[in-house]
Length: 325
Image (cartoon, rainbow, N blue to C red):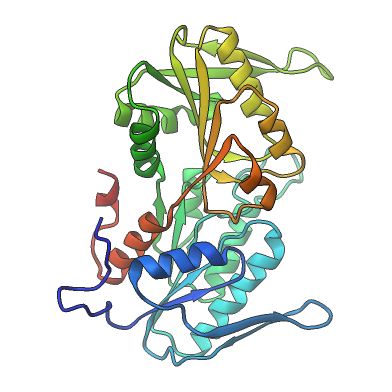
């Protein structure tokens, strides 16, 4: 990936603007530095009753604008910020507005698991689209079918290349096994395993009886190997810690985890710190808390170069998928 978004004459891509909400300002600034394009001046503040007020303080008429905003905690506030920013830009005559959503909240509600339950991911997709968004750029959607919830172009980036490079630099590729913490993540695990040339294994999570703790059955050979758990989201951390315990009981010599989105709610950080995980590596798609930064076995993986390169290619009408092949 180029380290400078400018052309050989040192010029920034024409007609491109970057606008940031408040969900993850450090990530927005890192993307801005990568592209060497300053963040557009603007104001996002709250009235006394916490209503959101947005003012774009630069001319964006005819511009190709990228709005940087994860819909992470507090999810509803950050989602409303995103919608209002998009509306402000469309009313200011931006030529095209791309919503860059590194972490797409409500993605875990992508189907009806029971009667009288919502498909919130579809509702959020409708809201983003109706606000005036022209296209969406996101990272490691919890469910790939969410791309189809939008009727506008939607690019789903993958953190696998960034994780692969980090694994090669910090762990090496000798004697590894890539493990999915559940059956639903097998495709993701297989993709990473192919990149690091390692076999895969699966943790099958079952609850034998109501009220009893879950039992993790390991499918595949992990004995004598260094295990790498791979998933898109870590929230409470319970499944991840149980999977690590099961892998060690089945003969793995050590267990590390690579997760794209570190939600890490409630007592998750403490749970991870007290677990037998050697390390948990999460991208900075979600603004890390002080507890996450202070945890000795949790490490942040910068994702700004990947997102920045995808933004640049989108603006230049170049291939984004070629980043991953």
